[in-house]
Length: 251
Image (cartoon, rainbow, N blue to C red; front, side, top):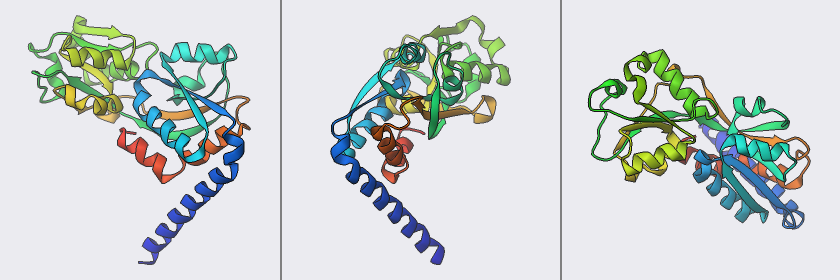
């Protein structure tokens, strides 16, 4: 009972601290706008986080989504992007962009999904005669495209699927093909699968041992680390409210 009570008290203290910090900074932050960028595959959780943070802090949050290569190109050109939501390994190796720190968001999870009127009992069904086109995000630039290739190679399925693989640019494009039924299966992240669950046939989560870990973070762009709005965002991301949103979206 003592351990339980201590955890509850710590959670309450943390919540009150977050609220106090945000309220104290409120008047100054209300004058600033925070530009948050993210890969298109994370539009849903980032949008919900941005809306909740804006409501709690009074900070106006502007959002930018797209292909990560394009987003980082804009950051490198000296845009106003303050933070970038994405795969840590990709951000750390971004040319001409320096990040001051990384705020944890969660672990990205790869799934294989299929359209309505289709069913996969296991991942081995990808090699079956009933599966034709299998879509995946860009395996060179998109983290879930890389993860999909790693899974296919480590599971021995790549040689069996062969030319049926259909690379596209982003996770949302794969999801669009799944919803329209233009492919028989596709690799996306759990976050997008949850978002389109009612419009597809289903999905299977891939064994995380068969692809490299996907560490999803919020990278603070160099020079923005002392921005009061960024500091308030960092405080908010440690709250139970933010964690609940991320968890709900598969992170």
